Structures are given as C-alpha cells and as structure tokens.
Length: 223
Image (cartoon, rainbow, N blue to C red; front, side, top):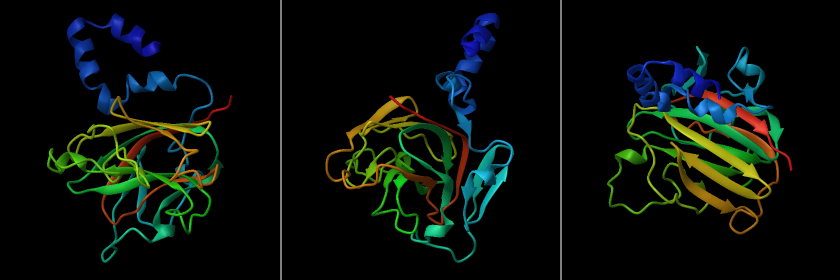
C-alpha cells in the first residue's frame, strides 16, 4: 500500500521511471510481502541463517558465489548455501542474477542435506534466456521443478539481469512465479514428488558457476 501511495504523490514522469525499474529494485514486488511474518534472510547477520563451506560472500544485502579455482560440478553438498532452520509450508521471494550459461537451483523440503537430490525438491535456476527459442522446455529450465516438471512458459531474463521468484509451498501444492509469470503449479502429493519429505532445509546450489542473490525473504504459512 505504501508503494502505491508513493507513486500517486510523484510526478507522472518519475512514477513511470520507478514502475519500469521495479523488477530490479523490488519496489512493487515488496508490496506482496507487506503482511506479517516475513523474515529477511540476508538482514543484519546473514550467517545466523545460513551455513556453507562454499565460497559465498555476503555484502550490501547481496550474497554472491564466486567458485574457487578448480571447483566444478554440483555434487559438493556442503558447498551449497543451506538454511540452519527447517521449514514446512512457506512462501519465499528472492532475486537472482546469472552470467551466460549460469546454473543453480533453489532446494526445499530437504530431509538430508547430504543427499538433496533424492531427499528434497529443486526449483531450477538457469540461464534459459540464452538457449534457442525453439528448444522444448524441460525441468532444467528456470522455473522447472526437479525431478520431472518443465515450466509452462519462458520467463527468465537475459544473463546479467535480475530475476525474481515468488515460490509458495502450501498444503501439498507448489506455485512458482518467475518475473510475475506463473510458470509451475504442481500437486506435490503425486509422483514423482510424493515421496519427498514434508519439511526440511532450504538452500541454493553451488554448481561451480557464479550467481548472486538478494532480497531473500521467507515466511511460514499455516491454514
């Protein structure tokens, strides 16, 4: 509500500039987070929320992965950015920025951080904007859910630009919104995801490729 009032008070030209830039600044996106219970996971002392052996740096409200020389692959589990807290049903919003060819993922309901592929669910983060437009979408495109569920549409921005996810996991239903577009709505009680834990850690994948994250906010949701 405050953001709407602010825009009404601004000259028309300046208001349009702010609206155009809202996707990167989070000005309008923050409105959907105006309810109670949101926690900023990068505020104040972010390492109180996270644990990792990877080369993640926290600075100015942004967390950035800079792979160390010789690091490769994605099966170095402790190098992921893992939450110290376990979550059941939740909403999360965050922004990510990749380089060309970038690859990562948001994990949740991870019952074992040493085996997240089999004991968790992943929403894919990928430089889908750089692949040919005529290539069929698959679960490794940004907004896809691993294992097995491709996004419904292409919504990722080009490398170097900030993208915004709003992900809701509630009552066995998963909704994935990427840059304002609903790209996945899934019944998690059905295969291939029904065997995954009902709660667990959240985390971001270290694929030995650079990624930056900001505005990571989460809140538990209840009936």
